[in-house]
Image 1 (cartoon, rainbow, N blue to C red):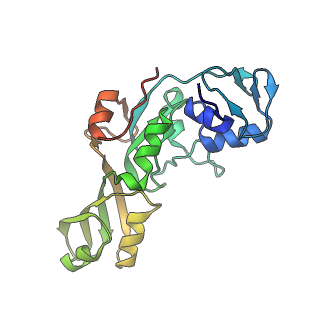
Image 2: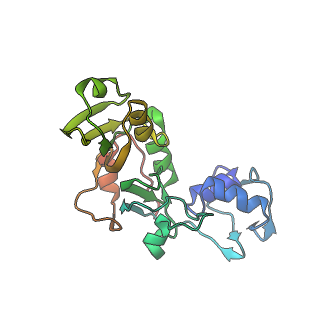
Image 3: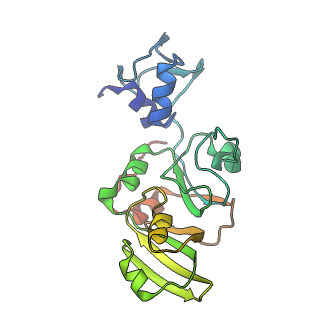
Length: 233
């Protein structure tokens, strides 16, 4: 079996994200076969090493993927230094081992995927794979056809417009931070509401804010052709 860096092993096993693993290792919180290891690049065989974090034995997390309707006013990080409510507060115990696939900012709502499958998460967020993201956007002011044609989006469709506000459907193929808000701001329109309704072939559907459901491997293979979905349980 191949050896990999310890921080990657913890991520691969769905125990911690790569960043979390690196921080935990450097802080002396991780033991390998009973010995403290402080080098994130230390090589291990993930399937054979006895790993503990903060003194607790950690094994490969059960494969799970969750689709949640992220409410507005909730941050996507696991912990927030400002004390704001997080997506993991919403999920409770259901969010223990999963990590978010990309992010939605504090003021945005809609479809958020969380998974233990780090390989799948990396594939979805890799810009080279051009995974479609569809948003329903409300902005201040009247949006014209000329404005839409100038937007750096894969597709933008005007649903309704008036002098007060406009409603637009926007499709992007990468998930840059606050991209939708920034491109409308550049066009002179402030985004007042933003909801993601589709990611690849997955749709938000009828889920209300805070509601979530499990997603199967079969759904994911159909939703993201070309992605490798892990088989481990």
